Image (tube, rainbow, N blue to C red; front, side, top):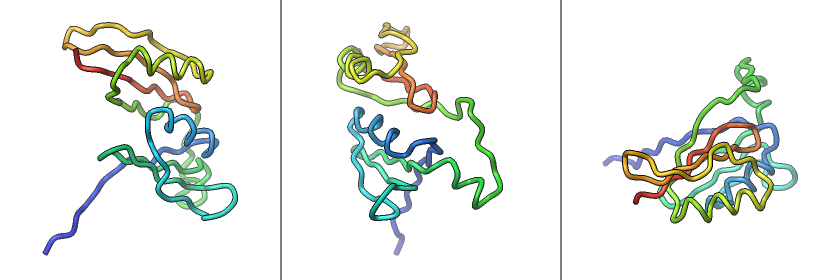
Length: 127
């Protein structure tokens, strides 16, 4: 008997609630929070088959002695129903747009926004 094994990224962020609100704009929903009450140090998010962990950036330093720094640490690539409307949702919420929607030679409309910790998030819709 095998058990389902799942892998997902854990994003180290400076403000867990702010990042959860950002990723909620992409349809991610909170499934778990620790601690259960008060300000969360970790939140597990899901969007269809996709999962993200959102953890306070103090965690790796306190537990592992690793300083995560302040530069962009990852790029997340997310397929959405409409790049244009998703970009407008982020613009209306006050998030910076790094690259306006454009048609890519590989057959997708693509744009970039930045999450609250300045990590690029690609938004794409197949043409």
